[in-house]
Image (cartoon, rainbow, N blue to C red; front, side):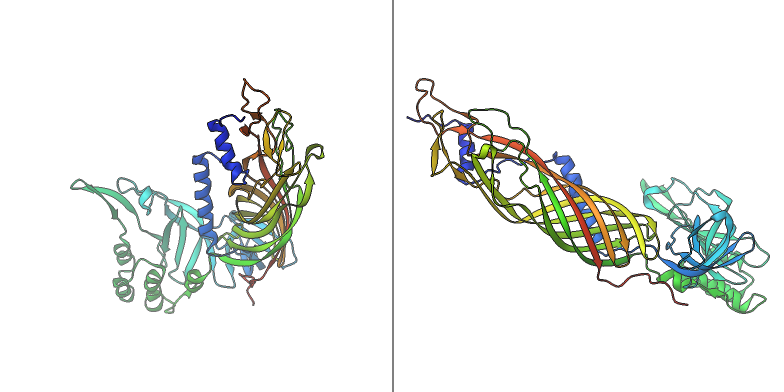
Amino acid sequence: MTQEKSPRSEKYNRCNRHRRVFCRPIQLPPAVRKSLTRLFLLALGLSGTGAAHGQVFERGFVVTTAGDTLRGEIENRFWQQPPTRIDFRPSATAPTQVLGRARVRAFGLDGGRYFRTEVVPLDRAARTQGTDLPQRLVVDQRPDTLLAEVLVDGPAPLLRAVVEDVAHYYVQRPGKPFEELVDRKYLSTANGRQGIVSANNYKGQLLLYFGDCPAATTALESAPFTVAGLAGVVQAFNEQCSPAKRPGTSYTARTGSHRSFAFNGGVLAGVGYNHLQFGSAGGGEEAALLSNLNLDGQAHPLGGLYLDMLLPGRRWMVHSEAVFSEYGRKGTFALAGGAGSYTWYGTRVDAHLGVRNALLQNQQREVFVGGGFLLNFTTSAHSQEQYGTGSSRLTRTYVLVPTQSGFIGRPAFGIGPYLEAGVRYGRFTFSLDAALNEGASYTDPLTVKEADHDPADPLATTTSYNGYSYSGVQLTYRALVGFRLSHRPDQLAKP
C-alpha cells in the first residue's frame, strides 16, 4: 500500500512529472535586482548610440610662459572646461610631456581650436540649471586665471570659459578691461507661484561697451546670446571701428563642429571557462549524488560583436558586446561512485554593458580596465540524468523513484557584475575578464533525501518523497581578441 502524498511532496512531484529539476531560482533581492536592471538599461541607452576609440593627438603648438614656442602634437581631449594640463610631444615617436596650466601661455591645434591664458573677471556664483538656482540674484565676480578658449582673435577678442557647466563669454576692446557676459538665472516667487528669472543683460552690457561704434550696436540689435551672435558683434567692431579696420581670426567653425563622441565597432573571438559548482547537500536516506559537482568546468569557444562609445575626454568609454557560446558538458559523465550519470549542455548569448578607462594611451596602444553588468540568455538547452536502469527502481527503504529524468533544463536568465583588463594595439584589442552570475537552486529527482513512510507499515512502498536540493553560483572567465571593423575616428590631422 502507498501513503497519501503530503502537500510538500505533491509540489515536488508536480515538478518531477514535467521532467524538470530546476524548480526554484535563487534571485537577488528585488531592490538590488531592480537597481541593476536600471543601470543595465541606462548603459544600453548610451551604448546604442555608438562606440569608442582611444587617445587622439593632433598637430599644434604650445607657447610657454618662458616665451618658447613648441611645435609638435597635442592630445585633443575635446575640452568642455578650461584645460588644466596639456599633453604634448614633439613627434609621434617621442615621449609625452605633461605641461601644467601654469607653464602654458597659449596653445592651439592646427585643426582649429585655440586657447590662451588670461586673467578674467569670473562669477562662480552664476547658475543656469533649474535644479541648482539660488533664491535671489547672486553676483560674486572675482579675478581668475584661466586657459580660456579663443573664439575670435583680433583687436576685440571673444573668449569663452565653461565653468561648472555655465558658459562665460568675455569681450575686450583696446584700452578697456574684459567684460564678462553670462546668463545668470535665479528663482523668484510672484503671486504665490515660483518661476525662473533670467538676469542676462548682455545687450545692455554690450551697448555700453561698444556704444560708440554704430556697426557694433546695429549688429547687437538682432544678435542672440550664442557664439555666432556675439562673434557678429565683435567682428563688426573689428571691421568698422578698430584701428586695423579688419575682422579678427575666427575659430568658431571648429568649435561648433568638432565631434564630442567617437564610434567604433568590430568582431570578437576567444575562449571562455564556466565554473558552476554545487555545494554539499548533507545526508539523507540515500547518498547525495551531486554534492560538490561542477556542472561545467569546461573551456568553450565563443564569438560575437562589440560596439563602443568614446566620451569627449577620450579616456572613458561605454563598452557593449553580445557574445554567443556553448555551456555545459556534451557526453555522459559519471556521478558519485559511478552510480549515476548526466549530460547537460546548450548555447547562450551573454550581453556585457559597462565602462572602460584608459590608464595608458598613445596613438597605437592603450592599456585599460573596466567593469559593468552581464546579462545572459539561454538560446538552447539539453539535459539528462540517469540513476539505475529501467523505468523506475525501488530503494532499500521502499521508495519507488524514476531512474531517468530531465536534469536541470536551461539555466535561469541572470544578471551580475564583471571586471576586465586589456590592451589595444591598432585594430586589435586583447582582454581578460571575470563575471559572477546569479546562482540557482536545483533539485535532484532521482535520489531520496526523505520520504513519507507509513509508521504502521514501514515496509509499504511509497512514491511520496523529496529529493536533494543544491545551490551554486556561476563564475565565467574569458580571454578575448577583438578586431575593429569601423574606420578609426579622430584621425590625426594632416598638415
